[in-house]
Image (cartoon, rainbow, N blue to C red; front, side, top):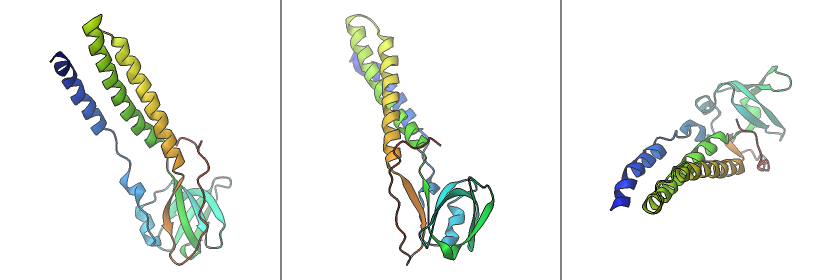
Amino acid sequence: MFLRQFIRPYAVLVFALVWLLPATNASAQKTTNRFEDLSGILKAGDRVTVVMTDGTSIKARMVEVNAASIVITVEKSQQPRTIPSIEVGRISTRDPVWNGIKIGAGIGTAAGLVGGLLENAICSNETGACPGAIVGLTLIGAAGGGAVGWALDSAQGSRVLYERSGVIVKHETATDVFGRVD
């Protein structure tokens, strides 16, 4: 009885925190085979990898995209380059790992908080309250969850946003597990 009265308000709080975690951007999940649809998917400043129909690959930042072409800046030169849509075989982007860290840390925090509250309930029955258990297990859960979220998001590699139908383009493999946090 005591445990149920003690845990119930905290369970509601944990549920509310997990439910309120920011969702990932749904538009970032879109893929298309129509070049003209890219204007609704990409925004200026996005890091992209443009693979040409001849197989050459360019890593750059997107400046502008329309139905006829994409304008990019290669990071070394900073000079805008316009590529006609007919020459583009595939456009992909790396999934930022920061959202995986946030989601993992949120789930880990919730799990650690529940564990800490249960430990505190046992302590208060035996020797008195143990607030250190709540704080410690919550922090351990947040760190572990964040690490798992980072690892899972890093393993995904790049996400294809556009692929020209009828053109065979060699796909890249995701080997950069220790990528940058954007």
